[in-house]
Length: 285
Image (tube, rainbow, N blue to C red; front, side, top):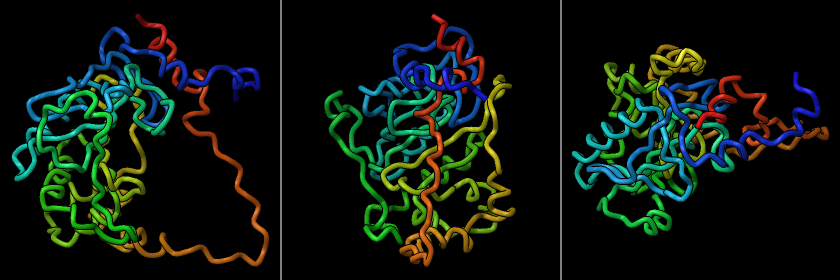
């Protein structure tokens, strides 16, 4: 337990957000996806043959070399889809990982990446265009189904991401997975169980890699996708809950309900709450 004095110190996000360049040394992921940092990260080039990094002003296009390689590979597969020239890539991590000033609780070890749902028509956007262009939603307004923006190409790209052995799980709006479940075969179980429903992922999907070899301080997420899916593909009543009961208005309680105490989140962490190695990551030149 940290003392009150320690908890009142500078927030970790302010320290990590102030770093504009990565630390030296080999690539290492420390801690967990939502409470960690990373050394030796690499920048995804702003533009490549099959991708463009978006919102460059955020300086969040930094990742573990394995993640950078994954993005390059997935974008090449996306470029083979009709109507897609590659991928528009959203946030990865800050130069040294760690908590961010806004937008994410995870993305702290350079192993998470957001991919836009917008099919790129061209890959020569200017920096200003990358700040103003918006993605598209693939979910209906009532949150219960996909809309007309959803396409077989989206499904194919999500499948390609989930089939990659480096990937631990892929987060996407529940209606997208429901659409994919309609054509699922038994042989699809191993990759389809990696597609995980979550709120707020209708404009982009979020890929999370497994802890890479050479990062013993990286904590693997639990439960595994196999455990969450009970060995199946996740196309069951737990998936249907997201578009039925989860959207139902709460029933009024006959008794006054005390508000739950606020949980401390990523923006509340001080450096002492992160892995000890994160101090060295911050101090490194």
